[in-house]
Structures are given as C-alpha cells and as structure tokens.
Image (cartoon, rainbow, N blue to C red):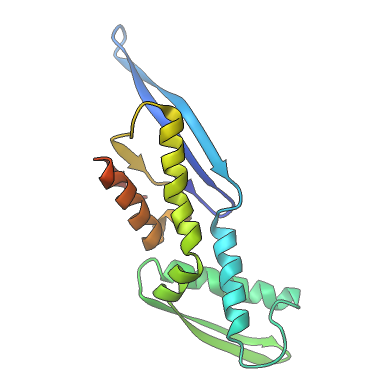
Length: 170
C-alpha cells in the first residue's frame, strides 16, 4: 500500500524462488491506483475546515499567499496528529493582517476525511479480489499518509480479518 501526497496505489506481489541459483524474484500480480485519494485531498479538506472556522469575514481561500501559509500549517498539523490527539493551526497575518488560530483534534480530522480512509481498505479488497490468489500474509505500508493512525486502523482491520499482518513504515 503506497499512500502518498498525490495518490493511493495498492499492488499485490508474489515471491518466486529459483531452486537452481537460490535467488528469488518479485512478480506483480495486480496493481490499482486511485488518483483522487491522497494527502493533497486531506489537506484540501482541512483547508476548507479552517475556512469554516475563521473568526473574520474574509475568505482564507481567496488569496494565494494565504492558502500557501495555511497549507504549510495544515501539513504540519496533520503530521502532528500522527502522534498526538490534537494540533494547533496558528497563522499570523493570514488575511488582511488577521491571525488564524484553531485547534484541530484527531477526531475532527478523522471525521472530515473518513471516506478517504475507508477507500484505502476498499482498494486493498479490490486488488486482492482481482489478484485471485488470496490475501497476502504481509501488508507493507509506504508513503507519508500511511502514518495517519486511522489509515493504519483500517488496514489492520482488513488484514486481520484475512489473517495477515501489517508492516508499518520505518
């Protein structure tokens, strides 16, 4: 499972051993990608979430510089939520000299992006069905978004139901 900033890719591989030279090869059985699911989509949803909580009438999304500043803070907050229950989004002089300070809780983030997280498990199921060789014994996570606790929970649920284990990113 490769869940990065721009897309979600799930691939099913099999190891093929050569009895002659004690080597092995890795053969891809099936791979599917969803370009509509990724870290960028989570960031965009959290930008809209911040827009809904602004304490002033000016839009946060109408200014490129404001979006740039806010996106940087949202990325940092999402990264913080991989190890904490809440993260502060604090941007000075965001729009017309006004500051934005909001507390993003893990449960708010998970609620706003719940369909994204569930689509990870759905794509894994789809790849396994298409591969027609059963569920792999190991699921390897790659990409920054796999550090999000809810993504790991969804994948753990799917893998455990099939008797497999999940290998978290390093």
